[in-house]
View 1 (cartoon, helix red, strand yellow):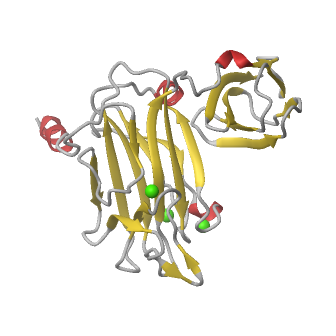
View 2 (spheres, helix red, strand yellow):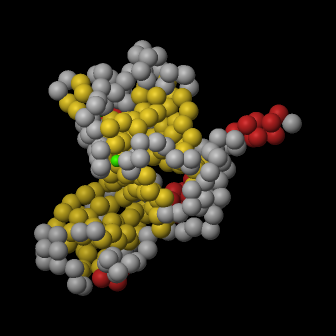
View 3 (cartoon, helix red, strand yellow):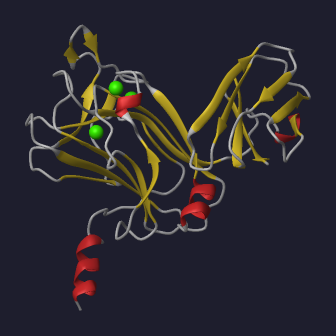
Length: 279
Ligand SMILES: [Ca+2]
Ligand SMILES: [Ca+2]
Ligand SMILES: [Ca+2]
């Protein structure tokens, strides 16, 4: 009986679960009905900010794209607060989903609560899938994450569902634009990797050997432009990034632990992701 009552309460939180693909750049200035925002202390703050309004110590917070971003902080300085922004998604029957977003922070100390969490059950239970470490990031430096949700589900025992929740979470005790603490998010995108007329065919790149002991060659069939290569681990953290000039052969020397990785090949607006195994 106790657990039944608890579950009913927890499930009331996201009202509308977005259909896919879902994109949010915060330019409308309001969180849509797919979001649920909550703070452990009443004065905790999860709001959309315009660029050029948060200024401190000669720095000014800017959106990554457009001129608005989502900010999380604690205006009542000196009181530790947990901010949670839940995004409800209907991922029932989905596959090949990627969650990408840009994250930045301002003097935020790393704590175990900071990161991205996922729930398959409307937020009754969450699993942390990504650390967001303010202490290791340069202040106001935007970092790109591209998480392979198929892989994350597999690793963490999660599954796509009608009540899938991605939670962005920040824990600290001071405020943006005041010298201490706060997270910034922009350009949140959840979509299946699909081939379109504007996208490179997956067949245009050949990666070998695969599995590899770390040496990896990428052969390009037709694309002779500058390529940016990112390698992501199985929870979507970027562990390698390098650009290659037009026409040059691409040989990567990956000094990584054994496991499954995703090689992202970016060219203009194209985005190809291939899975590799490091032995
Ligand atoms: Ca924006
Ligand atoms: Ca923190
Ligand atoms: Ca920092």
